[in-house]
Image 1 (cartoon, one colour):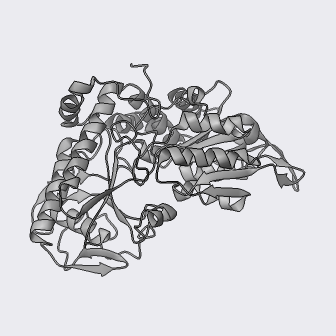
Image 2 (cartoon, one colour; image 1 turned 135 degrees about the vertical axis):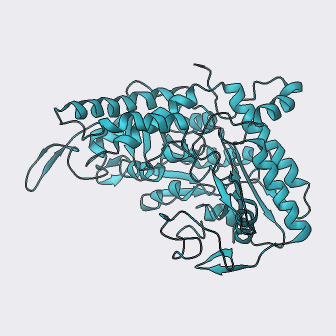
Image 3 (cartoon, helix red, strand yellow; image 1 turned 45 degrees about the vertical axis):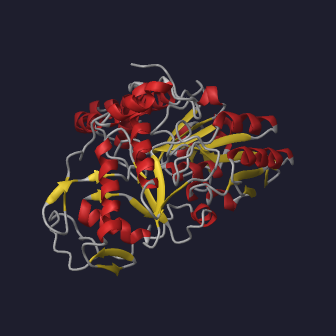
Length: 474
């Protein structure tokens, strides 16, 4: 197993002259096997084609190794912590050891708490209830940028906070963060590790040093960064880190918050219930400390276990191959998009280096076409899945001049260069011949008119028949 680690903003380790050729070669095939890799998608014009999944940024497919592991441990699934039975003892051991595996994966400090949650959003809401309080008032403000996902934006609006509008360059934005911190009164700097909209990576080590210089701590939303780069909490100076299993090739909706225990042990328990207490009385309670304080109720044992197993798989990847695979697909896609008339590739900062400061996320728009219509066309006529909308980052999309949304292609270890090539071919066909089918708006979403495709009988609704999608504007 490779022990090398990627640090955000670290330069690629491939020799410069060979990087492009090596990256293209590695990108031609999946780096790791995922479930659903050969899924056949029905086309509106008839026939089927291999589904090109370019929506990893929303939920990534499960690694086949993780799926096999789930089947291995499922017979032992039982309630944890207070069961004397054989299965309960095994499940407890698996669940608690998952904390150690996850802590090792992110280079955590020995005393860092590892709390399992539902997802990154849940983790950040948990931390919002643990901010330091003095004399009944919050001891400081939370500082964040306008480029954040709503998960790292909305929880802080209920506590003292201050926001910064990012500048056109990353250098100017970092300077603005320094100015804001120097004014004092900030207890926590909350930043994304990598933008879920554009894939741009922030310089976490530099931001952590700034936060600490002015007496604040730093929280990193790593929902997008963790599936694409190795992170080392101790080396990077990160105080709190949150990420999600469903973006890290694990099923069952588990998330995690890793970080310094003092705030967490003193904070408001995230979910009042069994297991979170030392002693409960009819009208009062003594709360536990440690992860148990915030894990009230029966935990998601299988979610935590599969999340931990996924981190082991990623930790075992060759770091050079991992970077080359992703950068090869991204470079090919960006280069191809920029050659198509009317297509614009979007990024936040003009000084971002696409070779080392981005993950497998590409954001773009097509002049004259609604993003939702393009997404529906690509799905129905080409079997390509990608995301459209505002990506739960409304302030950022407005700032980018995309108030009605854009398109996002995202990929990972199970992707192949062919996926990007098919997307480019689909867009080129759209520009050349237009839509090949009629589309209508149903429940706020573009769908093919008179959709006659068949779907699995166990699927409760076929596209276009469900109620308004809650993420239709996300």
